[in-house]
Amino acid sequence: MKIAFSTSGDHLAAALDSRFGRAPKFLIYDLEAQSFEVIDNRQNLEAAQGAGIQTAHNIVATGAGAIVTGHCGPKAFRVLQASGIKVFNSDAATVAEALQCYRNGQLTEALEPNSTGH
Amino acid sequence: MIVAIASGKGGTGKTSLSVNLAALLAPVQLLDCDVEEPNAHLFLKADVETEDVVSMAVPEMIPERCNACGKCVHFCQYNALALAGGKPMVFADMCHGCGGCTLVCRRGAIREHLQRIGVVTTRSTANGVRLHSGCLDVGNSMASMLVEAVKDRLKPGEVAILDAPPGTTCPVVATLRGVDFVVLVTEPTPFGLNDLKLAVAMVRALGLPFGVVVNRAGSGDERVQTYCAQEGIALLLEIPHDRRIAEAHSNGQLIIEALPEYRPHFEKLWQAIQQQARTWREAA
Image (cartoon, rainbow over all chains, first blue to last red; front, side, top):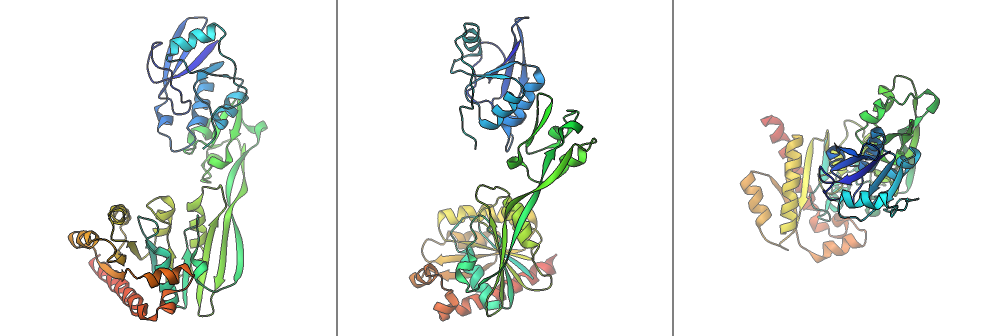
């Protein structure tokens, strides 16, 4: 399975970005292959509105089965949920730390958005 | 002639100017384009004649026709559409009603349905001010579209005063587009000047003839007047800082009725607007 992490950097040691829709990048980690790719999210970072919706749409296209981020709002959550993508909230400092937490089973799946719409 | 009363800063006196100018020029059309907070009707004694509901077309998916090609999602500049689990999803409150998604869909999987955004109310006063007021529904953000609906009521060939929303955002641009002259109202304060500069940049970008009215003149400093002189901007009128004007306004009274000595100020303003509009026309 692939897991998407919201981040501002290009590697595992980079910071986990607390924002979902307006995260600058996403690190898509492949648990089986133990490799990753980074996708750019700048277009949504600068969107006038609906950044979460479009980001969720793009995450669906990566084939990720789960997303680890700080906060996820109601519209993005609806898209992810309808796509069968599990949402995990984490306040880990880096992507690597968040990945370790996931592997250790320390992250619990979010069953509802943890940030309000705006 | 269509004249818009606008301002960078809010609370400088757009509505005061609009309603008094309209009362002076009656018979005239007055359009309250400040659809998020219409208030011109508070100053004019008139009963509601009609209230028309304004709606916009938003997309609705026909899932069995959709092949999840994603063209509509890609097209939508407002991120109102998404594909989730191979199924299309609509976020109607993000939609700006452009209709593009229905055009790019080759499979006829998108139809439109009407969604209410607000109302346009029409009133007429005994002395012939015909007032059309837009009122956006609470929670709706489609102000520009409602402004267009208010402007659809404009009768061509008759003088019209448009009371614009404050600022320099889309609903203001929607109000100003197509008018013959813009009056920018400001106050002689640092805030007034700062926001006046933004408003001047906006009307210049739109290529519209304009002039400035300084309200509450004497309450601040002379920086607005200095700026106008430097920029070659016509100063159409200065309304003095007079407590009695504020009192009359607070009681919902027209200045030209409560304080008739100010009537010549508004007559002078109308002359200045016409003269400036003529000067711009000749220069063009």
